[in-house]
Image 1: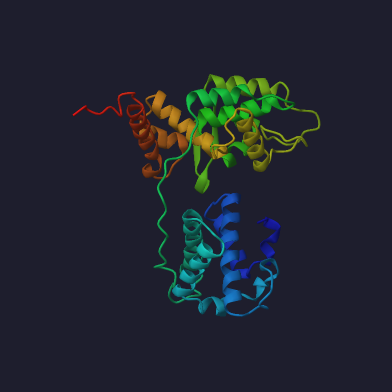
Image 2: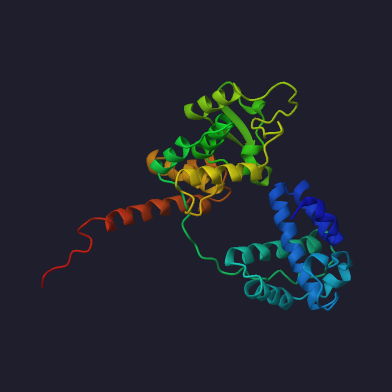
Length: 324
């Protein structure tokens, strides 16, 4: 979904999106996800109430007709039927359905608690679908080194610096593209703004400093007004999608394209390598990654446990059985 399509949403949803970005400090990408989830939900409601022609395409459903009176008629069972629709018709996985629940629940809480438009919140007890807890994917040390070794091309200095920062600092994509070159201090630190508009200090190691220094020697300067550290081919702040494509292409060049890896997996890689090879305490790792809850960070301790189990299982004597 694009931001320019927000005006096609119900007015109360538009107001909510402004609220969560301006007041709650959600990132632009997060706001778009909320918008997409609520658009899907209200398209379902309009269709289920026969408020549009039966054969109307989703994109042609008029959501501006959704007002507080229609919203007041929505029940908890409507939401559960919507989740069944998402599972069976849209083939959404558990994680996507869980995200949609959060979007719906928080929107109705906003209408109830912030605006007072609902006397009671019908979605207060909307349960989240159980999601499978899986270990995050990451690169081994050798694979990370291989990825860095294949970077080439017209923008090789920029791309090398970007991937080096991901692998060494564990930044989020939105954090990286928001960096201005003036953010980097003489002591090799920079302050970035993460989720929830929270600031944290990032310490650049020598590999990061060297990569940025090399890139700055070729970074365009003449006629460039943008203070962004990383520029696109048009000499503007690089777009997150451009970074995603660049990382994916280099993963393929390194022979890692069939692993379901992505930019975010490079963040997982940084965290895993720091925990496995740097003896980094989990509390310190929490601060480095900018996690709000320790439980989010503790997944990396499970990675180590899983790696240890695999190492033991790989012993050539692992399948040995007695003769008797």
